[in-house]
Image (cartoon, rainbow, N blue to C red; front, top):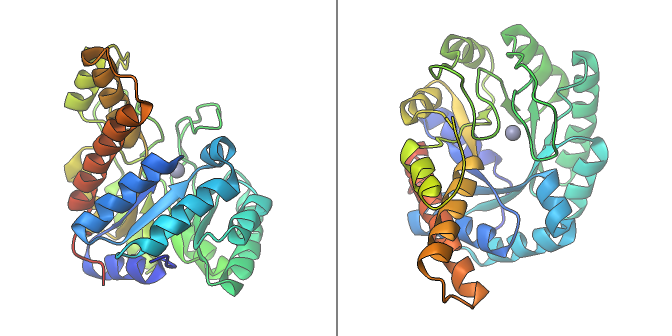
Length: 306
Ligand SMILES: [Zn+2]
């Protein structure tokens, strides 16, 4: 069923597990996420970036996910990832999204607060959960932003932000970054900062840029022609530690891309006779579903659908 995900985010925060937020852009990716959640009885957030919405069309992708959600036996939220303006967030609410992220974190704090508060009031009127970001994430998002140095979330500012905006869940920055190239040297996250923030606010905390980018998955894709030198991600033990400290939603996009690309390259290489594209897309869908299942197990949300 299609749901507002807030009660699951709160349950995760209270009980030490996290809801997976998985990025989709077409029928196969959306169906893979919903199937994985159904197989593992997990609540899940199916999310679209602005780039994905541009690719698929707002109404098209919303219709696909809403239909899959309606027919699913587990709670599925449709979430707008990184809505960069009040207009996009409003459009998402209008298209039937049950959750939106308003990301005006690039603005000075007072303006970020004002924009977020406006969306919170608008979205809550339609029973839509709101996520917002404070601090700035490094890395390139799919809209082609210039790589920026991360600015970590200041705990006291997080307290002010949630108090003045009424936001439901909060994205913080502690060293993760978007994309498949997260660290130049040893992976490092600021867990002390996370613990300090979690002590001060009881909102579900959200981690972006959290894909594992596992060495074996990179090696598999490269065996079939991909070129991903120096790709690195967040080790699984970091994810577990972050959840134990208050993170209740974790986004995954790069790992799904890696799984899809690896399988696509393998099938095209090993089965040169393939001619039905839905056979190829079916293989890709299977690879994405397996990856989503592994992430759900890691996040501890297996069996939490009620
Ligand atoms: Zn993000």
